[in-house]
Image (cartoon, rainbow over all chains, first blue to last red; front, side):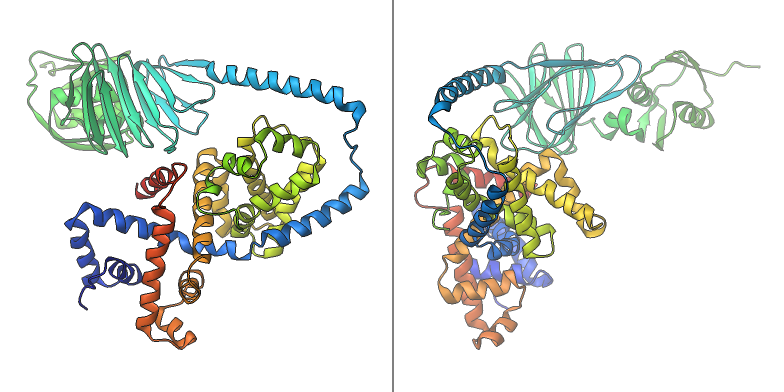
Length: 327
Length: 215
């Protein structure tokens, strides 16, 4: 089949034959030709997809239904008459209106006064459910502040310290912002990780996209991308080393591919909230290839002991890695 | 359905102003059990509420009953609404809750009606309401298509017939059906997505919707 010259008949053909591979290939190249093609296709596609649901409006005869409802209402009214508004009640009515105006004024005032709630974790991770359905997962030793209810145009929460994972409910009308010190992260509906430590704020995006902003600097991040922001200089850099391991504190999924022991120890420290101390005699460059899914720290240490001939010794929240004592 | 021209149903505030009713008056009218105000609000919201209930309930009568119940409750009980702008989402939520109750009573909530459970979440409800409003506008725009074009589009998208089936049923050539479908798409897109004079940012909201669907 040759491609019709008219855009609409071509789009119609594509929508009606999703199984035609040749046609769909033509569609892909046509879409790639020009940005305006993509926009047009998306718009027509939306109408096409939504149209079948519009069929339910076929049966909605509003005037006839309203007549039926009024009939029903008259039967109910006959059963329980409602006291009509009389002249005697006017005064009360006026007072009630005044009260309503006052209430509206108070409502206007109170919606601008936001009630903030603080949440801080110590030795255990915890989570918070926000009023809009978004979730914040706090790592150990993290602190956030969030409003009891979201009012006004935007939704804003503050990461005061530590690390947290944000799973934000989509709502394009009310954009979401995470404020961490001088930096802001603007989102529309996505999930991402933020870690605030000393003068660095690290962001890693799991799904959707966000914009990291600090004064005049701004950087857009897509899913799978990370960035770090220096809060002193305001510089925002793409962080290519950021990977899924940044979320390990929450997912307990760690992936190491040719990773140096030094980096492995850092990832484990982040993921399990421990400090790892390496014996100076150990080569930090030895590589590790391994995946750990939902393993406890002692399990991982046991695996490492089997792979390397080092000893891992845990004392409270500190793990000492040293060479085996010669017997 | 005269007042449901493309931009009006986007904003209730507009409806209330154009129909000479200020929002506070509508609320007062409802609270004072004003029969005329009830009739007006009922007629205005009926298509949206009915189509929503109809999506989950098998029959037309059941869906209409749900809408009637919601408004009868409004009549019988005092309801505390601070702001008229909240009226639509209030009614919308009430209809969905009533549908869930109905399905629960008839032990139908399991199985393919599981999707309705999501609607108990606030964020999802908001998106769903916007989708329903778009569908209402699509329906209104389809009604304004030329007669043959409208019939063909409805058989295709509402009844799910293939072009050849439509051609057979209406004694037309397949080429004519294709041409009419193309005209329908072109006109719907023009009517809904690029109106020549937009008094409010209808296009802006639709762009947001498009964005939402493209994620």
